[in-house]
Image 1: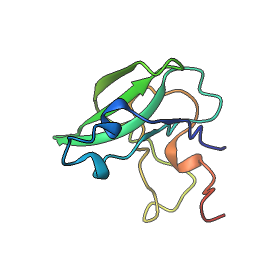
Image 2: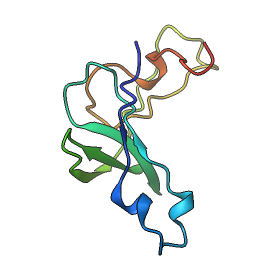
Image 3: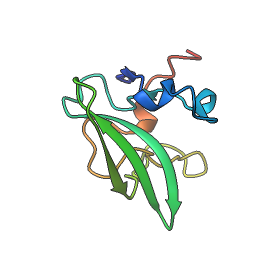
Image 4: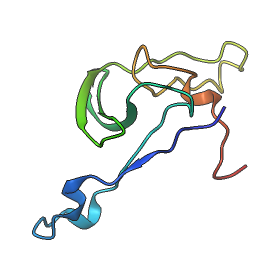
Length: 105
């Protein structure tokens, strides 16, 4: 499986008066290429198992979702090497640990 990797350069990245403008990364979809829903990128953890994701459509309209991560693990993997899925609970198509490592592979 391969990630969507659709990039959204948000308006707040281009605010020159913002002292943190240079530190703001564009949003990059973490879902499968064939997800079909809103693009999704993890923003931050607020603690107690609750995370924040940015969701956007093809027109660039952004909204935020708050909730738990999926946390599914690969049952065929050695339990010591298992990593939980970092995508939002009830996400579309595939878990984060199923994607090909396109940067290193």
